[in-house]
Image 1 (spheres, rainbow, N blue to C red):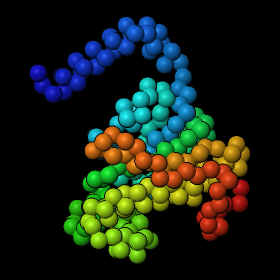
Image 2: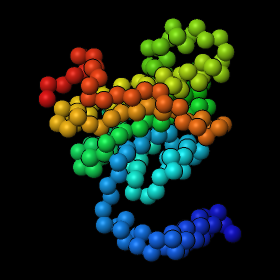
Image 3: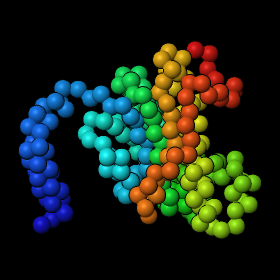
Length: 209
């Protein structure tokens, strides 16, 4: 069987089994989506948001890109953020990175990756900001792991810098922001950072709302 046909066959089996467990599942799901979470994760195929969190369709709104970045010029991500925060009214936003992330590893090198250079340069900025800490770590794998964690922290901070989040914090004291790192080798999530409307941000990034 061709790989693409196998996916279609898997879809049929999944739909049938889902209906057997809950005959009204798809009808109920089609009426509306009211997810509690927005997931900003890496495009890596080994990090599926629903499977590793044990959630079902309709519970997580998902945005993925290489190395789970929150870039202030990324209209795609900002559109998802705007919709999730102001229309879906999510209560939690999770930025989830993962150890052994190829995008983070690319940023640690001087290798030319073509157009990808422009994207991972955002992670090079994280390296520059945390250079002293990272340079003090002698073990290369430990340095790599720490950069993955620091990158997640910076992306959570980048969320807090947006007018979308600041406006929501002012108007409804939500959503909460969370930074996680997923361990592919053991399947466990490591919480890195939490932020709420009570946390202060650098005044240079604050908007008059």
